[in-house]
Length: 295
Length: 271
Image (cartoon, rainbow over all chains, first blue to last red; front, top):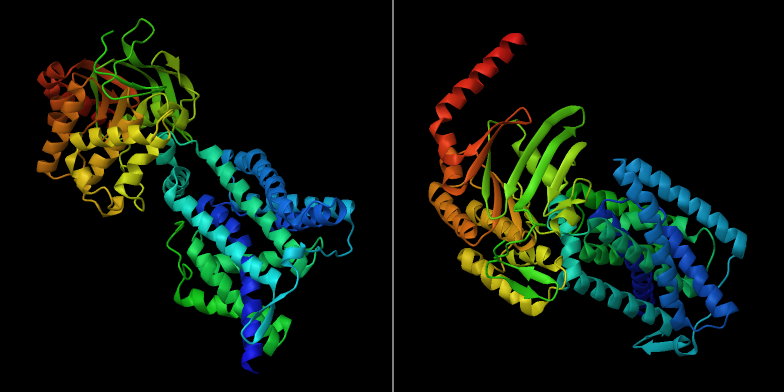
């Protein structure tokens, strides 16, 4: 294996990581902060990919309009799911099993609706002209779009970090994460904020779907396939930790890229779970986990 | 009703506020309140009232429903039957955040601090929830808090979890004051604190009282309670056993204790 091949695989790994990180950030906020297990997260990612595909291929709307459109649709749908379903379960003091059943049921029904509307044949999304072609970085030739995905995901993570650490709303969200009852007795509308943050998480999943479409293709099962890896990313990073999500996303992205090159796709996936088990033995709260803190 | 020094910022009013209560001077009223924890019937028809600007102590031994009374007022342990009225409004069925936004502050027994947030961020939580509050007013609120609890000014950027017990209690009280511009509920504010710290805290609370704040305090230590409160309620089994001025309660304390012990002995015998 020469240096060019190694560099290319590293960049491939970072691109995969960028999509994982973006997707997992929404999931870790919802699970780490609110303790909600949203198994429909993959569905929102798939829905975002279909929204992108439809708006670009069938309506002629630009790629740049797809990103906010997918965010808005997925965020509103996610907020609706939280406000109507999960909040009711919380009110009835139902636990995680009920959340899993509700969100999984929602995802299954949603996926069937998507199949009914778009069919089961995998689709591919075209790119805007500015992101087509390749860039030459030293010895490697790399697709412009992949670099864009890395940069875009990084920007979203920075924006999330600023939101949680430097804004008033972020302080309120963190206060709910630490002590929900105390925060409510100080006037925080915790139910509304929970809905907003849940919507933010599913909206980001939709954006990740739009970004992944041109690389990984669009098909109705793309969300379910990724869900297990996403849970590995957030558990390995430490629940609720955005920095941990970045670290574990990069680690898993690189393991998949190198594992696929040196062994096979299946072996790479097995390797991911192996690494997770080893790390959790030595660090049970994950790489950068500290309880359920959002850092 | 008299009005103290009142600052009004648009829809937002904070500090030294005395409120006219629909022609009445009663700030808080509980009528025949029943609260349950699961199957346990904790408050069994509790009735009490607190006048504007008054400091009232809830007294009684452990497990008599003092903490539950405060939690019921705040909506954290909502009443199943009966009514809770605050500032002329029925708040019995309201969510805790809605009750807090009506100007009621609460300092729970465990202080309820956000350990991984700084002192400044802890104080900002109730401020951010006030309607019409802005950055300029934040500086004024912070100055006012620091004038009451100077130590918090020196610890502003420190994590709440790293403060001493006394400092944590001051932070919790200060935080409740920001949301509770009409009234604050204090649950065992001096519990676990060194005597010198208790002295400082009592001084600060007395200052609050002088400024016209309405206060309800749950306190095990009668001496501390009588240093703060004008009037007291002795609770027994989720009901009011006796109501009087702190002075009179103090005079008859031995008699009350004797009666309560006799009641306990009778119950033990019966069971």
